[in-house]
Length: 545
Image 1 (tube, rainbow, N blue to C red):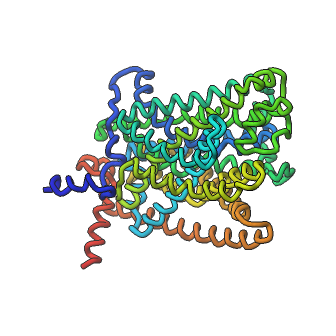
Image 2: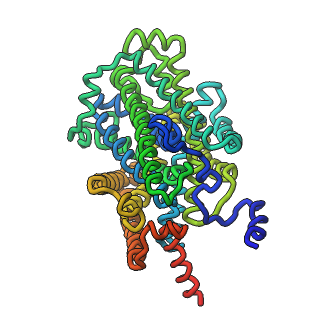
Image 3: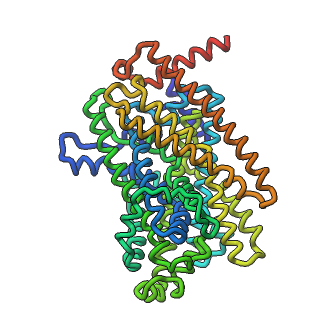
């Protein structure tokens, strides 16, 4: 009867969903048993690459390169610290998915009310769309630079990456992972080549990795940027909320016996190896971007930090730092490779952004729609502000158009500051929970300490940056009003965060009061989150009566 009632729903564009996370690919990848370390690691490798994409998307590029131009290697330590924090959080996200058998959105929703679930879904959707704006701008500019396609047309062309997504959904998740890895290698090799030609000062790079107070100083100000604002820009572009949701979902693609604690432990261990290796690659890419700003270009030469300006600078011998670079630049190779890497970065993010959108829609509001439809809707919404920006600057000098697009891309990232605490803090609470993770898998003391210090620090820094971010959207004469609006927004975020954390705490206590351990629930074929949801459904029915 149930199967018969569900069959017609498969023909609907939007349908109810409350099953396993990303059900189409959940537990579809076989992993070897009793094999050696490297073969097992290869089987688990892939999800980390999809996550790492978010740490090297177009939104990271201008902040890192501009930071290098303005302050040399000073901000290298910020890239290192933010990458280490990212590794810590992503490891927690993968562990939550593998052990709890639910993604982060499902786990939060199971402990919170329907109304809060809708609010969190909207907030996270805005963050994904903000990231999508950066991808639209990056991909459209890459098409313009490589093929001379007018920007307006190039923006519309980015919508058709939905066709690429349709193709990828037919070939299997393991092949998608391989394609993403190949695109990451394209980006990495392009920047390794360009930096190698620049002959950077490796001693200065290593010195820049050491933490100093200068990296978060409020002076000096260079081209309108201070070390603190540069550091906040790098952090904001590095640690993104949607990656935590994504990793907790795709870590469940490996097929294991969840009743076998040793298999679960092996899956957690190798998933963390995969994540750390891929995020180390992302760290190298972001470091290379900063090194480009220092070593490839002459100090202070790049006045236009947009993708247009960087492309032009890579073909302008007067801006480059040495004879080898100048010789290669005359062939046009440096600038073309830069544009190719930009296009590869945008296409990579197409895949991960769409999967994350599906995760949060199913998890928070229990609704599902085909991946191609999701991609089409979110991309069409994301191109609107880009088209408006291009249209409004069409009669202005090219440098003004470039600056406007760069400002839109940077300012769109403000939504990430809204959503980040609502993914990081619940993730910490859930992975600290004995009821959720069991005594074997809950966070150790050092992970708990590092996690809370990192999360609180990131949240405070993002909130500190909101007033300036709001002011960037308006004319200078309205700066005071923008700051006031930012403070009201911060207050609203704190209140909403209290509501979210209270619901999560109450849900966890409910489990403990029932005396249900994770192992008991798994023996009954349930997850801890399923048990909580069943209790909530009972309460809802009783309230309705």
